[in-house]
Length: 248
Image 1: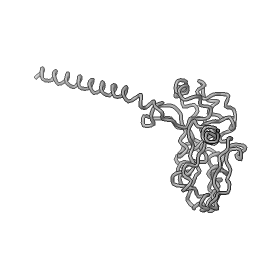
Image 2: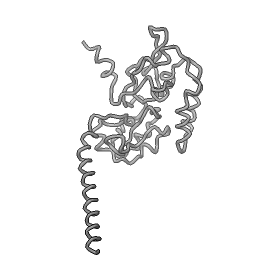
Image 3: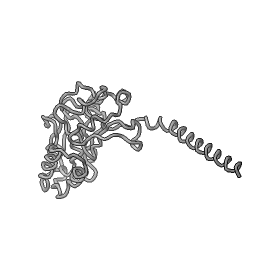
């Protein structure tokens, strides 16, 4: 009997080690795919992606000082860079705070301290990805209840700030009006340098993006369509997205 129990313990021990070995080997095999071309919106001031991943110590200081609760930390299901900060504009965009507190809180330079004001932010670039669903282009009024997503978000965050409550009240005031949300809710000091509503050939208006766009994601956040008509392309620039076809 003692020999049977000993053999059983050895079997469990080696089986466990074997499973752990397979998991570790699988992790090694998977990691190159996790570190591939996957991109996400990084907080303001983020340096080039590879350098960012090397500098970021995953301390979460940027997250803690963000008054809009815009920053999240990546978990295993979010690809490479586990524990690093990112912004999901479909949930909550960046609202270009004065003095850019997330940058000031970064202790390593992963968020470059030369980013001192809203206009210095360069997260990505806005693109009208789904024009067929844009309410402004179809001259459709913003439906009541369009802001349910942001209300739910605000209701669930801890330590909601006055800035968030003011943002919610401003957004609610647009219900029933013709949609100009992406332009009117742009948070940079001179929003017309980033986005404006211009006449469209079909009789409505459409958002036009300019080189002052910082890619904060506020426009994607407030877009009232089920899937945001306007989105932010991470790490993209105005020159790359809008001027590449104009070059002779």
